Length: 374
Image (cartoon, rainbow, N blue to C red; front, side, top):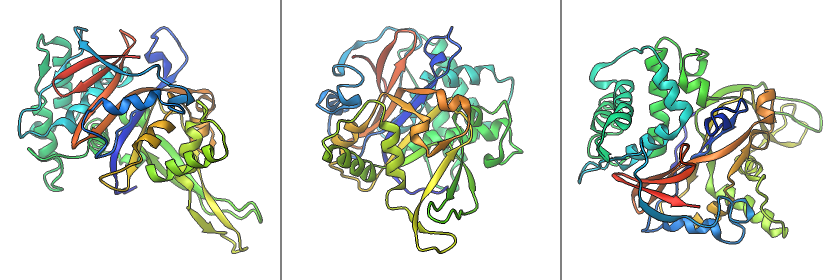
Protein backbone atom coordinates (compact mmCIF):
# COMPACT_ATOMS: atom_id res chain seq x y z
CA UNK A 1 0.00 0.00 0.00
CA UNK A 2 1.44 3.38 -1.01
CA UNK A 3 0.70 6.01 1.62
CA UNK A 4 1.69 9.66 1.36
CA UNK A 5 2.03 10.91 4.87
CA UNK A 6 3.78 13.30 7.18
CA UNK A 7 4.23 11.18 10.26
CA UNK A 8 5.15 12.83 13.51
CA UNK A 9 4.38 10.02 15.92
CA UNK A 10 5.05 6.32 15.78
CA UNK A 11 4.04 3.74 18.38
CA UNK A 12 5.27 0.20 19.00
CA UNK A 13 3.59 -2.61 20.93
CA UNK A 14 5.37 -5.83 21.88
CA UNK A 15 4.41 -9.03 23.66
CA UNK A 16 4.93 -9.68 27.44
CA UNK A 17 7.50 -12.43 27.40
CA UNK A 18 9.96 -9.75 26.33
CA UNK A 19 9.46 -7.92 29.59
CA UNK A 20 9.58 -10.93 31.87
CA UNK A 21 11.58 -13.57 30.10
CA UNK A 22 10.25 -16.49 32.14
CA UNK A 23 6.63 -15.91 31.13
CA UNK A 24 5.17 -18.00 28.33
CA UNK A 25 2.34 -15.54 27.66
CA UNK A 26 2.87 -12.98 24.96
CA UNK A 27 2.97 -9.20 25.32
CA UNK A 28 3.10 -6.54 22.67
CA UNK A 29 4.52 -3.09 22.05
CA UNK A 30 3.69 0.28 20.57
CA UNK A 31 5.85 3.00 18.93
CA UNK A 32 4.83 6.57 17.97
CA UNK A 33 6.14 9.83 16.51
CA UNK A 34 4.97 13.38 17.25
CA UNK A 35 4.12 15.99 14.60
CA UNK A 36 6.25 18.72 13.12
CA UNK A 37 5.96 21.94 15.08
CA UNK A 38 5.05 20.16 18.31
CA UNK A 39 7.33 22.39 20.34
CA UNK A 40 10.93 23.38 20.85
CA UNK A 41 11.59 21.03 23.77
CA UNK A 42 11.69 17.34 22.85
CA UNK A 43 10.39 16.43 26.29
CA UNK A 44 7.82 19.18 26.69
CA UNK A 45 4.99 17.25 25.00
CA UNK A 46 5.27 14.42 27.49
CA UNK A 47 3.78 16.62 30.21
CA UNK A 48 0.48 16.19 28.39
CA UNK A 49 0.29 12.64 29.73
CA UNK A 50 -0.56 14.03 33.16
CA UNK A 51 -3.37 16.30 32.02
CA UNK A 52 -6.99 15.32 32.78
CA UNK A 53 -8.17 12.79 30.22
CA UNK A 54 -4.59 11.93 29.31
CA UNK A 55 -3.24 8.50 28.49
CA UNK A 56 -5.53 5.88 29.92
CA UNK A 57 -7.89 8.62 31.13
CA UNK A 58 -5.84 9.30 34.22
CA UNK A 59 -2.19 9.73 33.49
CA UNK A 60 -1.72 6.35 31.79
CA UNK A 61 2.02 5.78 32.00
CA UNK A 62 2.30 7.41 35.41
CA UNK A 63 2.71 10.87 36.88
CA UNK A 64 4.78 12.71 34.31
CA UNK A 65 8.08 12.25 32.56
CA UNK A 66 10.93 14.24 34.07
CA UNK A 67 14.41 14.14 32.58
CA UNK A 68 16.85 12.28 34.79
CA UNK A 69 20.63 12.05 34.95
CA UNK A 70 22.84 10.40 32.34
CA UNK A 71 22.38 6.64 32.43
CA UNK A 72 25.22 4.31 33.25
CA UNK A 73 23.07 1.27 32.36
CA UNK A 74 24.91 -1.34 30.38
CA UNK A 75 24.05 -1.67 26.68
CA UNK A 76 22.36 1.76 26.63
CA UNK A 77 24.35 4.14 24.44
CA UNK A 78 23.72 7.17 22.29
CA UNK A 79 24.34 7.59 18.56
CA UNK A 80 26.37 10.47 17.13
CA UNK A 81 24.86 13.09 14.84
CA UNK A 82 27.56 15.52 13.77
CA UNK A 83 26.67 18.95 12.29
CA UNK A 84 25.38 18.53 8.75
CA UNK A 85 24.74 14.78 9.04
CA UNK A 86 21.03 15.10 9.85
CA UNK A 87 20.96 11.52 11.11
CA UNK A 88 18.47 11.99 13.96
CA UNK A 89 15.72 10.17 12.01
CA UNK A 90 17.96 7.10 11.58
CA UNK A 91 19.31 7.21 15.14
CA UNK A 92 15.80 7.22 16.58
CA UNK A 93 14.71 4.24 14.47
CA UNK A 94 17.84 2.26 15.40
CA UNK A 95 17.44 2.93 19.13
CA UNK A 96 13.86 1.66 19.08
CA UNK A 97 14.85 -1.47 17.15
CA UNK A 98 17.72 -2.16 19.59
CA UNK A 99 15.42 -1.85 22.61
CA UNK A 100 12.89 -4.29 21.10
CA UNK A 101 14.02 -7.49 22.80
CA UNK A 102 12.29 -9.78 20.29
CA UNK A 103 13.93 -8.08 17.33
CA UNK A 104 17.40 -7.81 18.89
CA UNK A 105 17.54 -11.46 19.92
CA UNK A 106 16.07 -12.74 16.66
CA UNK A 107 18.62 -10.78 14.61
CA UNK A 108 21.47 -12.13 16.70
CA UNK A 109 20.34 -15.74 16.22
CA UNK A 110 20.19 -15.62 12.42
CA UNK A 111 23.00 -17.79 10.97
CA UNK A 112 23.45 -15.88 7.73
CA UNK A 113 22.02 -13.56 5.09
CA UNK A 114 22.35 -12.44 1.48
CA UNK A 115 25.08 -9.77 1.75
CA UNK A 116 25.12 -6.74 -0.57
CA UNK A 117 28.52 -5.35 0.38
CA UNK A 118 28.56 -1.59 0.88
CA UNK A 119 24.78 -1.49 0.48
CA UNK A 120 24.14 -4.22 3.07
CA UNK A 121 21.74 -2.78 5.63
CA UNK A 122 21.74 -6.11 7.47
CA UNK A 123 25.53 -6.02 8.05
CA UNK A 124 25.49 -2.35 9.04
CA UNK A 125 22.69 -2.84 11.57
CA UNK A 126 24.32 -5.92 13.11
CA UNK A 127 27.58 -3.96 13.37
CA UNK A 128 25.89 -1.18 15.34
CA UNK A 129 24.18 -3.72 17.58
CA UNK A 130 27.54 -5.40 18.28
CA UNK A 131 29.04 -2.03 19.20
CA UNK A 132 26.09 -1.33 21.50
CA UNK A 133 26.98 -4.53 23.32
CA UNK A 134 30.79 -4.39 23.28
CA UNK A 135 31.95 -0.77 23.06
CA UNK A 136 32.85 1.26 26.13
CA UNK A 137 32.02 4.53 24.38
CA UNK A 138 28.88 6.39 25.51
CA UNK A 139 28.00 7.42 21.97
CA UNK A 140 28.67 5.56 18.73
CA UNK A 141 28.62 6.50 15.04
CA UNK A 142 25.77 5.26 12.84
CA UNK A 143 27.71 6.13 9.67
CA UNK A 144 27.88 2.57 8.29
CA UNK A 145 24.09 2.20 8.30
CA UNK A 146 23.61 5.73 6.96
CA UNK A 147 25.89 4.93 4.01
CA UNK A 148 24.17 1.58 3.38
CA UNK A 149 20.77 3.27 3.31
CA UNK A 150 22.00 5.99 0.95
CA UNK A 151 23.50 3.43 -1.42
CA UNK A 152 20.39 1.20 -1.33
CA UNK A 153 17.96 4.03 -2.06
CA UNK A 154 20.10 6.23 -4.33
CA UNK A 155 17.83 5.65 -7.34
CA UNK A 156 14.81 6.84 -5.33
CA UNK A 157 16.87 9.71 -3.84
CA UNK A 158 15.77 8.72 -0.34
CA UNK A 159 17.86 8.66 2.87
CA UNK A 160 20.77 10.39 1.12
CA UNK A 161 23.82 11.56 3.07
CA UNK A 162 23.36 14.93 4.75
CA UNK A 163 19.62 15.07 4.01
CA UNK A 164 16.87 14.87 6.61
CA UNK A 165 14.29 12.14 6.07
CA UNK A 166 11.28 10.50 7.70
CA UNK A 167 11.96 8.22 10.69
CA UNK A 168 8.76 6.20 10.26
CA UNK A 169 9.59 5.42 6.63
CA UNK A 170 13.19 4.68 7.60
CA UNK A 171 11.99 2.20 10.24
CA UNK A 172 9.67 0.49 7.75
CA UNK A 173 12.27 0.36 4.96
CA UNK A 174 14.89 -1.17 7.27
CA UNK A 175 12.42 -3.95 8.06
CA UNK A 176 11.66 -4.49 4.36
CA UNK A 177 15.36 -4.66 3.47
CA UNK A 178 16.01 -7.17 6.26
CA UNK A 179 13.34 -9.37 4.66
CA UNK A 180 15.21 -9.20 1.34
CA UNK A 181 18.53 -10.00 3.03
CA UNK A 182 17.01 -13.14 4.58
CA UNK A 183 14.67 -14.43 1.83
CA UNK A 184 15.72 -12.57 -1.31
CA UNK A 185 13.74 -14.83 -3.64
CA UNK A 186 10.35 -14.21 -1.98
CA UNK A 187 8.09 -11.21 -2.56
CA UNK A 188 7.34 -9.14 0.52
CA UNK A 189 3.59 -9.76 0.38
CA UNK A 190 3.98 -13.54 -0.01
CA UNK A 191 6.63 -14.21 2.65
CA UNK A 192 5.92 -17.13 4.99
CA UNK A 193 9.54 -17.96 5.89
CA UNK A 194 9.96 -18.85 9.57
CA UNK A 195 13.39 -17.21 9.57
CA UNK A 196 12.12 -13.83 8.33
CA UNK A 197 12.10 -11.53 11.37
CA UNK A 198 10.19 -8.86 9.49
CA UNK A 199 7.15 -10.99 8.74
CA UNK A 200 7.25 -13.36 11.70
CA UNK A 201 7.49 -10.56 14.26
CA UNK A 202 6.11 -7.33 12.73
CA UNK A 203 3.77 -8.17 9.84
CA UNK A 204 0.00 -7.87 10.13
CA UNK A 205 -1.73 -10.16 7.62
CA UNK A 206 -5.11 -8.65 6.73
CA UNK A 207 -7.91 -8.54 4.25
CA UNK A 208 -10.40 -5.79 3.50
CA UNK A 209 -14.01 -6.43 2.50
CA UNK A 210 -17.31 -4.61 2.19
CA UNK A 211 -20.32 -6.44 3.61
CA UNK A 212 -23.84 -5.03 3.34
CA UNK A 213 -25.89 -5.58 6.49
CA UNK A 214 -29.08 -4.84 4.60
CA UNK A 215 -28.98 -7.38 1.74
CA UNK A 216 -25.96 -9.48 2.73
CA UNK A 217 -23.99 -8.81 -0.43
CA UNK A 218 -20.20 -8.62 -0.08
CA UNK A 219 -17.20 -7.61 -2.14
CA UNK A 220 -14.29 -9.95 -2.87
CA UNK A 221 -11.81 -9.91 0.04
CA UNK A 222 -8.63 -7.93 -0.70
CA UNK A 223 -5.62 -9.47 1.12
CA UNK A 224 -2.56 -7.42 2.03
CA UNK A 225 0.23 -7.15 4.61
CA UNK A 226 1.11 -4.19 6.84
CA UNK A 227 4.34 -3.53 8.72
CA UNK A 228 3.06 -0.18 9.99
CA UNK A 229 -0.61 0.57 10.63
CA UNK A 230 -1.11 4.21 9.63
CA UNK A 231 -3.87 6.35 11.13
CA UNK A 232 -4.89 9.94 10.35
CA UNK A 233 -4.49 12.25 13.35
CA UNK A 234 -7.37 14.40 12.14
CA UNK A 235 -9.73 11.41 12.06
CA UNK A 236 -8.43 10.18 15.42
CA UNK A 237 -9.08 13.55 17.06
CA UNK A 238 -12.59 13.60 15.59
CA UNK A 239 -13.26 10.29 17.33
CA UNK A 240 -11.85 11.61 20.61
CA UNK A 241 -14.10 14.67 20.31
CA UNK A 242 -17.08 12.43 19.62
CA UNK A 243 -16.47 10.43 22.80
CA UNK A 244 -15.87 13.48 24.96
CA UNK A 245 -18.88 15.21 23.39
CA UNK A 246 -21.07 12.48 24.86
CA UNK A 247 -19.58 13.29 28.28
CA UNK A 248 -17.82 9.92 28.26
CA UNK A 249 -14.33 9.37 29.64
CA UNK A 250 -11.54 7.95 27.51
CA UNK A 251 -11.16 4.49 29.01
CA UNK A 252 -7.70 2.95 29.15
CA UNK A 253 -8.90 0.01 27.02
CA UNK A 254 -10.47 1.98 24.17
CA UNK A 255 -7.34 3.12 22.28
CA UNK A 256 -7.77 0.32 19.72
CA UNK A 257 -11.43 1.22 19.23
CA UNK A 258 -10.51 4.86 18.58
CA UNK A 259 -7.91 3.83 16.00
CA UNK A 260 -10.35 1.50 14.25
CA UNK A 261 -13.06 4.16 14.08
CA UNK A 262 -10.54 6.73 12.80
CA UNK A 263 -9.42 4.35 10.03
CA UNK A 264 -12.93 3.91 8.65
CA UNK A 265 -14.34 7.42 9.13
CA UNK A 266 -15.82 8.72 5.89
CA UNK A 267 -14.76 5.59 3.99
CA UNK A 268 -18.20 4.65 2.66
CA UNK A 269 -18.88 2.63 -0.49
CA UNK A 270 -22.02 1.64 -2.36
CA UNK A 271 -23.39 -1.83 -1.72
CA UNK A 272 -21.87 -4.40 -4.16
CA UNK A 273 -25.39 -5.39 -5.25
CA UNK A 274 -26.48 -1.74 -5.57
CA UNK A 275 -29.28 -2.12 -3.03
CA UNK A 276 -28.91 1.57 -2.18
CA UNK A 277 -27.07 1.18 1.13
CA UNK A 278 -23.74 2.87 1.91
CA UNK A 279 -21.40 0.54 3.80
CA UNK A 280 -18.08 0.81 5.64
CA UNK A 281 -15.00 -1.24 4.94
CA UNK A 282 -14.17 -4.12 7.29
CA UNK A 283 -10.56 -5.05 8.09
CA UNK A 284 -9.87 -8.57 9.37
CA UNK A 285 -6.60 -9.63 11.04
CA UNK A 286 -5.53 -13.19 10.21
CA UNK A 287 -2.36 -13.64 12.30
CA UNK A 288 -0.91 -12.69 15.70
CA UNK A 289 2.04 -10.29 15.25
CA UNK A 290 4.46 -10.06 18.15
CA UNK A 291 5.21 -6.38 17.55
CA UNK A 292 2.62 -3.89 16.29
CA UNK A 293 3.63 -0.48 14.96
CA UNK A 294 1.22 2.45 14.71
CA UNK A 295 2.20 5.43 12.53
CA UNK A 296 0.27 8.67 12.83
CA UNK A 297 -0.28 10.68 9.64
CA UNK A 298 -0.34 14.46 10.04
CA UNK A 299 -2.22 16.49 7.44
CA UNK A 300 0.01 19.56 7.78
CA UNK A 301 3.56 20.40 8.84
CA UNK A 302 2.24 22.64 11.61
CA UNK A 303 -0.47 21.02 13.71
CA UNK A 304 -2.48 22.10 16.74
CA UNK A 305 -3.71 18.54 17.32
CA UNK A 306 -0.74 17.37 19.39
CA UNK A 307 -2.50 17.60 22.74
CA UNK A 308 -5.60 15.81 21.45
CA UNK A 309 -3.50 13.03 19.92
CA UNK A 310 -1.53 12.48 23.11
CA UNK A 311 -4.77 12.48 25.12
CA UNK A 312 -6.03 9.62 22.98
CA UNK A 313 -2.97 7.40 23.53
CA UNK A 314 -3.34 4.35 25.72
CA UNK A 315 -0.52 2.30 27.29
CA UNK A 316 -2.28 -0.90 26.21
CA UNK A 317 -3.77 -2.05 22.91
CA UNK A 318 -6.08 -4.98 22.16
CA UNK A 319 -5.98 -6.31 18.60
CA UNK A 320 -9.69 -7.13 18.81
CA UNK A 321 -10.35 -3.42 19.20
CA UNK A 322 -7.94 -2.31 16.48
CA UNK A 323 -9.60 -4.40 13.74
CA UNK A 324 -13.22 -5.28 12.93
CA UNK A 325 -12.46 -8.97 13.37
CA UNK A 326 -9.54 -11.09 14.57
CA UNK A 327 -9.41 -14.76 13.55
CA UNK A 328 -6.29 -16.01 15.39
CA UNK A 329 -7.11 -17.26 18.92
CA UNK A 330 -3.82 -15.95 20.35
CA UNK A 331 -4.46 -12.55 18.83
CA UNK A 332 -7.92 -12.45 20.40
CA UNK A 333 -6.41 -12.92 23.88
CA UNK A 334 -3.21 -10.92 23.55
CA UNK A 335 -2.73 -7.49 25.08
CA UNK A 336 -0.11 -5.16 23.65
CA UNK A 337 1.91 -2.82 25.85
CA UNK A 338 3.45 0.48 24.85
CA UNK A 339 7.24 0.10 24.73
CA UNK A 340 8.54 2.74 22.32
CA UNK A 341 7.89 6.11 20.73
CA UNK A 342 9.61 7.99 17.93
CA UNK A 343 8.87 11.71 18.25
CA UNK A 344 9.34 14.62 15.86
CA UNK A 345 9.54 18.15 17.25
CA UNK A 346 11.06 21.35 15.81
CA UNK A 347 12.48 19.51 12.79
CA UNK A 348 14.29 17.00 14.98
CA UNK A 349 13.67 13.35 15.85
CA UNK A 350 14.13 11.71 19.24
CA UNK A 351 12.88 8.49 20.80
CA UNK A 352 11.59 6.96 24.01
CA UNK A 353 12.03 3.26 24.69
CA UNK A 354 11.26 0.91 27.55
CA UNK A 355 14.47 -0.55 28.98
CA UNK A 356 13.59 -4.09 29.99
CA UNK A 357 16.40 -4.86 32.44
CA UNK A 358 15.88 -1.69 34.49
CA UNK A 359 12.09 -1.51 33.95
CA UNK A 360 12.54 2.18 33.14
CA UNK A 361 11.77 4.45 30.21
CA UNK A 362 14.80 5.96 28.47
CA UNK A 363 14.99 9.09 26.32
CA UNK A 364 17.31 9.02 23.29
CA UNK A 365 18.32 12.27 21.57
CA UNK A 366 21.23 11.28 19.35
CA UNK A 367 24.26 11.13 21.68
CA UNK A 368 22.22 12.09 24.73
CA UNK A 369 20.67 9.26 26.75
CA UNK A 370 18.58 10.01 29.83
CA UNK A 371 16.43 8.04 32.19
CA UNK A 372 12.90 9.38 32.58
CA UNK A 373 10.95 8.74 35.75
CA UNK A 374 7.30 7.70 35.67
